[in-house]
Length: 357
Picture 1 (cartoon, rainbow, N blue to C red):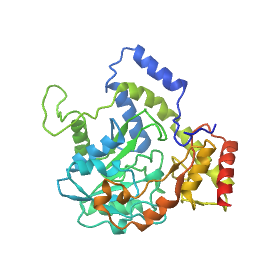
Picture 2: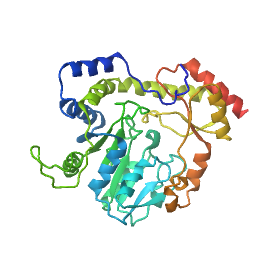
Picture 3: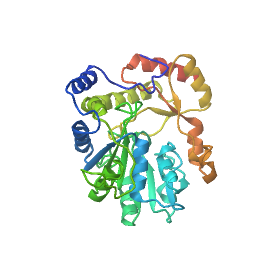
Picture 4: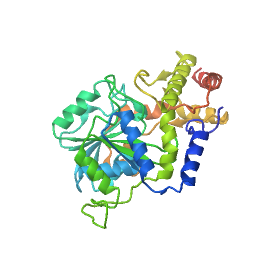
């Protein structure tokens, strides 16, 4: 069914309601405990990461990763121009200075060739689950050169490289989002994954006020409260079970859009054999006019991110980002909720085709 929010409606039902109700009726601890550990274990199993730590959001997860990376006041770090502001805001909060790097014109991920050598920490964003084909080698080269790579994989749960490596597990740390618009959700929430035991231990301490011991009030590192709740985990566990089915439907939606918009609009290249897109993405002329036309038909949609350089807060670090600027002027996320069927997609495409004509 098409709705004004059909670009972001979460998928949940009786399984989640029963899981949460059963947990409440069991007299569980509510706060982070055994259910959270169970969810983290399932995320490790799914992604192949050695360690997973649930946090309050992907935003706090990125801040926590920045704290583990020990970004210093005045230190430059690299970040993609095409990303959500949360990718870099935690590092900025720590006093870091963002070097905003334009994207490559195919994957629209950070252009690795333009990353300055004097940046020790690199934020790499897999927007809509996409990475360039060469990403594994480039991340490996950066790490071998002593760089710390933090993957913003908020939109990349269920997306892998051609070598079957899950997004978020190639860098030093990766962060997933479980917010409502994502492929699965816990209402709000995030998860930091890593294969580094030292980083894992630091994350555990930082998210729990800086405690480095299980019992007692001993604070050996700077920490905050990023802890999750078992209530949310009770919702997330059946979500993980549904994830493979949601992934299949997301890919089918993309194929339906491509079928009904063939030769009418440009699609951002997406390898559906390996990528699970949160939204189908198209490039159109007069994009803002099309948004108005879709919304007049009560069809939800959303423009892609503008360049970080054009955000009022981040414009003080403005650099030239022509590829991102072009993408931001033409890119559009199409509806992708789970209950959309092909006849719904065709109706949406008819509006788009009329616009293109």
